[in-house]
Length: 114
Image (cartoon, rainbow, N blue to C red; front, top):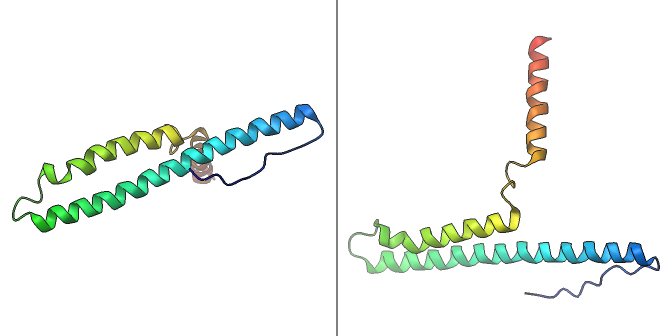
């Protein structure tokens, strides 16, 4: 991983400085995980495109078989779990999303009764 040489927060107030330092460390770890996921995704795409091209060129018949796509399928499953590990299970349907949808539906109902 790249080290971006970002210096942590420094403050004379020791308690506040400690809290900001912890927040910085957590943010840096989260960023490293996200960068790692995107590198994993990029390598997945490049490697599988090359593999599928090689298989397509060298296969006379039967390209559309499970064996041709097995690497992409199983690696894709691993990539999906990596996604869940980095972004969490509630990435798409988070509490904030639920709250926005409830407000939207309530607004629709309100307009319907007006």
